[in-house]
Image (cartoon, rainbow, N blue to C red; front, side, top):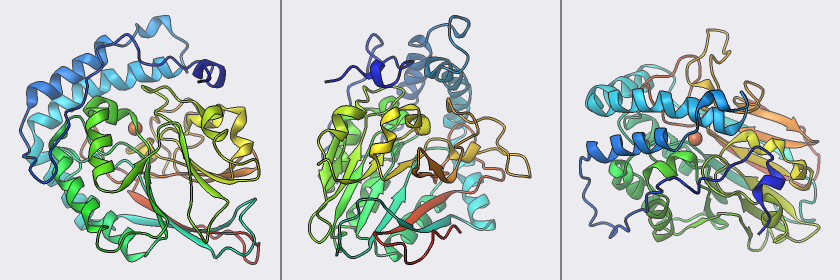
Length: 354
Ligand SMILES: [Fe+2]
């Protein structure tokens, strides 16, 4: 496997810290157990595992992790202690506001197979089931995705907040797809919070629901979309991302749709080999100024790719603002969203950005 450092020069895989192995859950028999100690231990784990900020490049992933870990430590404990109030606050905001937005785009992709019908894709990211996300936003996001009747569902990581208590709800939503599964399948990547909550548990849960988890893997779509590949890299903050190895699994003339949790993937020079990249992680800043300008975005690119549709390296990049929240049970001028895309091979119409 190619050394991730050659792809991401500042990347340091999490190898020395005490990595929590996830618990394999018997599906449907899982009972949520309030476990405040485990969540706080994980918060400490994040903190202990991080180098001193003063030793680091101010924009390196390590520094961003250190900052995020520090903030996470403080607010995750507060959110867990006030879980019912936090959930209620976010539910109120979703119910009283405009709810979850749909970022709807019709895009031409290079190398889209000739003669193939348009491919409709639903993309959900940063569900963050847990004390800060309530129920309303996630319920609405899944409903919007089902109503779009997509050919493929893509999940961009960060399924939980900090522990496993949100898993039963996630399971219930995923099992709804069993009645009418998307013909092209459901694919997922991992995010940084999936490492905090237990990577193995997340993978086991998703796979048991028929979701194909792509950790440095690429999967070809079935007919009539042969020639389109869904690729997913490991989390850039805590995993061992191998973009070159992932893309090498596809055919040279493939139309590749890449998922990576963090938009920092844009740093790679290999992005030109990808037709479309889908990311999450930023929450659109989650707390923004009234003009929509984020106060802080946990990304090496800063606010450049905080949320929305972009052109990067001559290709499409979409960064979802996500559905849930972390640390604070509130969003300010950064509404939650899902992406609904229709990909096609002929530029009969231009990209429509809602
Ligand atoms: Fe994230």
